[in-house]
Structure formats: C-alpha cells, structure tokens
Image (cartoon, rainbow, N blue to C red):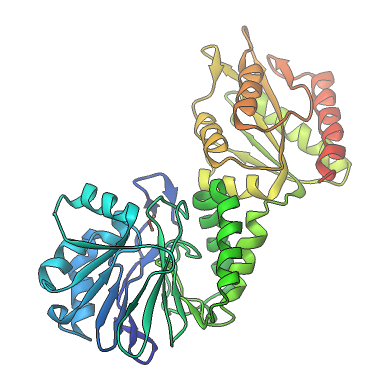
Length: 396
Ligand code: FEO
C-alpha cells in the first residue's frame, strides 16, 4: 500500500495490525501500530526513515510501486531505533548510490546497531539539502525521545517529519487524522506521550517554542507511527504543549494489589471517602490492569495512592513495576500516599513511602496500615483517610 501526501510525496510504510507489545514487552499497543516511511520524488529522490526489520520485504515492495530503490539519492535516518531503521540494510544494499543522512548522535547509534561502516552525512539544526524544486531542512530534537532524534522538514510542500514525536501506536485503515476515529486517535496519542515522552516534557516545550520561532509553514505533520496530521496539523502540537505542562486534574489514581482482599477493601474504603467529598478516582488493581494504561490515569491525576500488603518483608511484585515507572517517567505536580494490610511485620507502607521520595512525589499525608482483615474501625479510618486526601487533591 502506498498513499500520496502531496504531489511527489508518498507514505511507503507498513501497518502492523497485530502488534500488542512494543519495546519488547515494555509498552502495550492494544490497537497495533504503523511504521511510517516517506518517499519524496524531486530532482533528487529521498527516503525518510524505513520500517521495523520483520516488515522489510513488505516495505521494499511498497517502495518499488513508486520507484526503483536504486534511484534513491538520499536516505534520511531521523532516529536509529530499529522500528525505523530495521530496513536500512536492505535499502542501503538496494540503493548503493544513496547518501545516508543522520544527526551527529545518529552517526554513532546507526553504526552501533548495524556495524556496517556506511558513509554518512551528518547534519544539524539549520542545515539544509537542496533536492531540486524543494529542500530538506533539519532540526535536531535530542531526547524527543532519544539523543539521536531529528526532525526533517520538506520546504515547498511544508511537511514536517518529526519521527517519533506526535506519533501514536494506532493501526488504521486510513492514513490521515481526518479519516479515523478522533476519540481513539487522541487516546493513543496521549498514551504514547505519557509512556514515552513524559520525562522529556521540558524539552518538548522548548522544542515547540523553537519550531514556532522558526515560523515554518506546516501543512502536514507526518510522524513515524500512526496517522498523519493534515487536518489542522498544529492541533497535536497544541496538545503536546498542554500535556508537557503536566497540569493534573483533581482526580485520584489508586493503584493496589491484594492477597486476601484486605488491601482491596482498604482501597475501596479510601475511594468511598474521596467520593463522599465529591472527588473522582479510579481503583486500578495492578495484578490485572495494563501498566501503560494505568500510567495514563496516573498522568491525569493530582494524587497517586499506592497500596500493597506486606509479603516477605516487602511489597507485592505485581506493584513493583509501576513504582519503577513512577521513578523513570518523572511525573511532576503530583502528591502521593500509601496504604496496605499486613499480618506480621508490615513494612509495605514504609517502603512505598520511601519510593515516593525517590520519585520526587511528596507525601500528602502519612500512610495507613491495617493488620489482618480490616475491622469496621479500620475501614472507617480508611474512609477518613480518603476524605482527608480530598482537599489536597483539589488543590491543583
Ligand atoms: Fe524511538 Fe519509534 O522508535
């Protein structure tokens, strides 16, 4: 399948309907994904990015519908991660005269992945390459989301190809944002932002300001995953600005696991206390809830409450992964609280509170514990705990 974006500019990527996990099993992709590559036919023929290796053959077939790969003059690798560079070996073999264009960090990462000794042309922000009627202009975008990430802009057609930025893991029948379900599109765009870009939110804001200062006309934003933004393309830029500010909602994400339902009953009682005060919340049972979806709820929330019973002097291993995400994703503007049941030693609450400290999430209040199964007065204390969280939660 090939799709024309503008005269002489084509999507030549691959839709991966079956993908359910990305980065190995780090990120869930319930709606699949796509690996977007773009062909520009001008006096020079340019390919921007490729696809993941298992789809290299399909990608080469797509490309051959429009051009003999041997006629490529320039191949731009905006980012070395293999979902975009996986078909580079096939392309570089089929296009022996093509110049491989990368960022300075890309020169290192591409060689590190492929050990191919390809000659590369290194470009940086402000560099341009004349391709005939139009030019390519480059903007380095380190940590959006890797040190090697780069945006390529096509003058004349005013197409920004920002690689991972502004993308979504979203397999669709159609290629453009005005052709797909808007609710699904923004759910996937947000999940992608939360799970991939949140730690770099300050850089996102700076890069957006830098792009706006360049005063580039933008008709199309063509990312490397998901749909292409042609209808009001700057709407996703505005969304990124909003998300990068990490302004929380007066909402509580209660993450917990339970062994014999004591911690679950505590979670529900805390939720009841919040509800009594009119504060919205979700209970996320981490043994059966997708971690990446739960992180979207954490991203929205001002207050994150984590609960685990004590087991083996620690917390349940089903709660540990999301604690590691809270550390790595460096969420801002949040407060935390801990709870949990125990039978004998009872360390879980203290351990969760120590972890909040490592995450830079201040505690809203001292955590609450309950020994054995909660009695009526324990549940009443949990409801009060919830009611007491309502004020700080609203204080966003
Ligand atoms: Fe950073 Fe889509 O790879």
